[in-house]
Length: 250
Image (cartoon, rainbow, N blue to C red; front, side):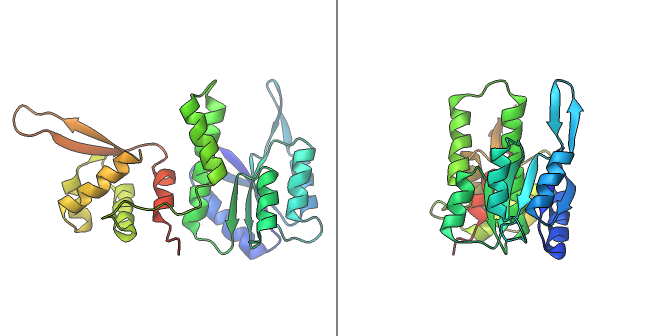
């Protein structure tokens, strides 16, 4: 379970963020504070002994920049200076490039500009979860895996990614939502087409695209007679992979 600390001086926003974070599987909110000073005190006082040393009880901080007293960037700098291992996602109305550059320089893993949609925060959390699992559960990674990790961290997956010619974002979203809600482990183009009410040929184009970006996997099943059957299944990180293609970008 990834333990999250909210640092937000607006109680209503903090409660909303708590609800958002708690709805994402694998995350739990362990505290909510209203200033940088309170955040440092919380982190310093919430360290528990574990086999082999000290294990911080806060893995991830959702941090606002504008707060009374110590500002968010100062807190982020202090976290790095003190060698605290908590990662930070900025959730703030600050959209000026100096603030963004400084936050990224200090190691923020993501940057969300208020107001944002819940799906954007969910994608940030799922992306963090996936990367954490990669680095914590594996003794080593391949160059390809590391390149993808670094590329996504630097590019930040916030930017909209364009779709191939002939595909449109609204239809992709319908297919995406249908696949998330599909009750079976695997599915065919025809089954998805019936679910969302568009032609099998159209659905097949979107499934082939999702297969190309490694969001789903296509399996070819050969029967005793007739043509082979193509069935698909979601791959780990499906929501994170598809998310950038769902952004409007306007």
